[in-house]
Image (cartoon, rainbow, N blue to C red; front, side, top):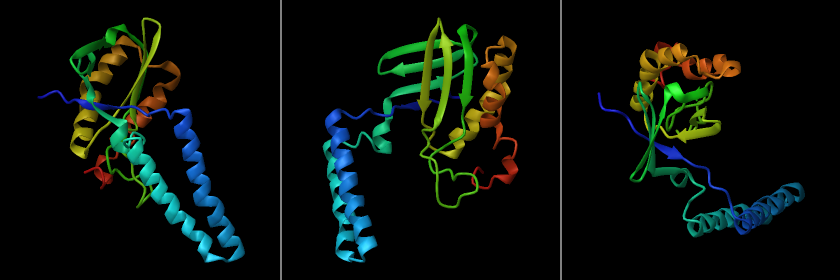
Length: 199
């Protein structure tokens, strides 16, 4: 079976200037809009259109780094095996062996377009998945992107059949969040046949 590789997701931090313009654009959208609604003057509601145009220009200038496609780093990937976690950054590869890790916390529950539980509209972007752990005293967190249901299903199967039993043996899952990790990991796995969006 070919080892799956998942792009890393990194939320970009805005610069002071970018943060300032984002606040200004938000005010341009909502202040006149709310004023127009309260005073029943529809002309002020056009601020919504101007603001959206402003955000489009803002995303163009920032090269879309705050949009989903900008968050996904395709030149940085993570993969999982019975040996550990492999992180690739261009030509450099780092391997985190399961046996060397402490307080592992696993959250795998999303792929692109998956609907939120109980929702017919809102969906995940696919980069809400993460794994946290401590190695040699250093706290490390990887957030990663799952593109489709087939990748999602295969990864969860790999964890349940191969990796989780190994971590139970090492006893290095984070103790206070073990149940939470299991629930986040298994909440849809256990109801596979009832999750029509999953299949």
